[in-house]
Amino acid sequence: MHPDGKPTPGYSIAVLASGRGSNLQALMDAIAAGSLPARIAGVFSDKPRCGAIAIARAAGLPTVALRPRDFADRDAHDEALFSAVAAVQPDLIVCAGYLRIISAASVRRFEGRMINIHPSLLPKYPGLDTHARALAAGDAAHGASVHVVVPELDAGPLLAQARIPVQAGDDPAALAARLLPREHALLQATVTLLALGRLRIDRAPVTLDGRALPAPLQLAANHTLEGA
Image (cartoon, rainbow, N blue to C red; front, side, top):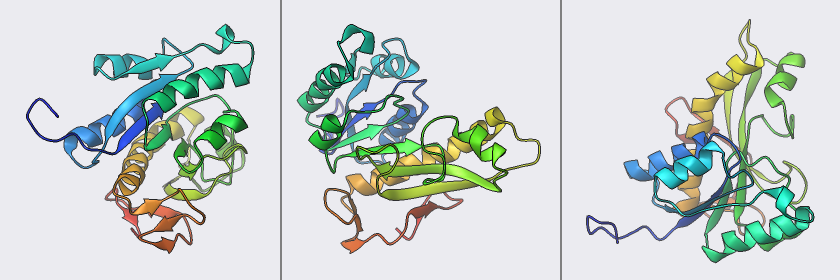
């Protein structure tokens, strides 16, 4: 129970992050505002000193941060980290700026329960340096995508996307900064659909309200997902 006597929402989220934690904070803000009916069961990282871990600890959330260099190889690190994730029994795992490629065995362990937010309009620009790559290609639009995690890098079924125009004079930092608020809103809206049980990723194909999702949902200007 919450201290005010209200029941704790049952839907639980584990968050994986390697960086400043802005997407984690966005999820926490949505939960605090009552728009996301969920709780964060734990925050997990490969970087003990990253901003996400600091945010989580300040909020009193359970944290586990394991440095890859303390393990023999990637598989050993992932086994330890994802065993910690499994211990909190999450309904959903959100990779929110988690910058390591996850081993295939760990992805399969949580098949149908893990999503990632990626700063590009997938299938364009999987991997790193997405803002610079979009600018170098001369793209008129850029954005972010939420997708199901599969063993192949940034290749899982697309759930939702947010788009912004590329402006004259943009550099990677400016483009990233302008995208970030839309990225946060995209993640909040997508996870809310998952928490409500409207969006299902635990079976193929992905479904929305019981029907196959024909294309990624698109974030509107009012931060709702068109078609949802």
